[in-house]
Amino acid sequence: MAHGPDAEAPLLAKPDAAATPPPPAKRNKYPFFCAALASMTSVLMGYNVGVLSGAQIFMAEDLGVSDAQIEVLSGIINIYSLVGALLGGWTSDRLGRRLTIVVANAFFLVGPLAMAVAGGYALLMVGRFVAGVGVGYALVVAPVYAAEIAPPSSRGLLTSLPEIFINCGVMLGYVSNLAFSGLPAHLSWRLMIGVGAVPTVFLAAGVLTMPESPRWLAMKGRVADAKAVLDRTSDTPAEARQRLLEIEDVVGSTSGGGGCGGTWKEVATKAGVRRVLAVVLTLQFFQQASGIDSVVLYGPRILAMAGVTSNTLLLSLNVLFGVAKAGSILVAMALTDRVGRRPLLLVSTGGMTLALLVLGSIFVAFAGAEDDAAVAAAVSFAAIVAFVVTFSVGFGPLAWVYSSEVLPLRLRAPGAGLGTAMNRIMSGVVTMTFLSLYQAITMAGVFYLYAAIAAASFVFIYACLPETRGRSLEDMEELFHTK
Image (tube, rainbow, N blue to C red):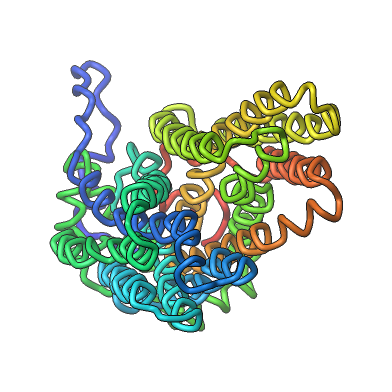
């Protein structure tokens, strides 16, 4: 494909050995602003997931909702999110990444408001469905936009932002629970849920001020607009020009693909495309199947069975889990562009396996030992924190980072939708079966099962995932042979 005179520009020439090497490029902060604003939608997602943990207490008192209905209401949002996840790829390609984020905000506006005014279980489920669709959209579009707007030097950091913001949203849900807990029951849970709708209008307005993804613009033939965005989001003018050449090359090589039908035809006919899609789906499967949401959602119950008897202490320790989880993701954000994705993923899954083995062994070693209840509780708490921390320094954020990086441009949005659907299915399965599973095979058996899955994910990462740090998104086409 001809790229014009720029294809032979001096920036691609070999530098003169005698010349003074240029100083290292200063990182551009503008893409961080764009990715952070886009990822703010993930705060709303986390809030809608986390706030129900406390709101359900007052909801049951006010509306007489049963424990079984609460369990379904809590976990069903993961299943509902499949609608948004599967539509998110199509919407991202049709409307653009930016407008899809606005659509997600609209769902986060309507869903919580419907729940806040609900007078019965039916409308609660309707509101939860609408919010769930928003969750699916947010999980698809935020990492895709961050990956496509970021220069290679900071792509790992920026693509990790949605994960840290999800956890910030969960923590804000806990804070809202505490802030409104002193009000009468018929007001407290409605305010807890309803205040989550307030930021959506401001976020949607803010998103419209940021640029569209340059790769989406190039796919739509708006090369001049894509160039303008790359000039603003690259570390150097030379890098902007190189990124544009690479994007044009990929878009040009797939311009006859025939839209969505052509894209999925490639999945059927190209082994490289099938392989990269299988990598994304398997990575998302393992991320949730290893049990993180069971530990996060049922942490108080696990600690109660390990010997903690005070409800106040249980809830306080639950907040500490959230703090440890969110704080650990900051470590991943700081290291992913320095040490790489693969080392962090291996350390993470290895640490998760060990922590889960310890946690399972505690329930074997201290079963029925009431005199050692304090020791069992302390070790259980330490093991849960270790599991949450090791998950968050690697597997938590980097499953999304890696998935958004390795998918080829023409498959990135729909492929991210499928990966998100896999993630949400497994999250729903894990959270809605935990109670019956531990009753069937004991608490120790559950954690040994999760440990085996975490160990399998370590083997998968070691055998199948090459390093992507420092590569452009277009380089992934060569790495995975998807051209």
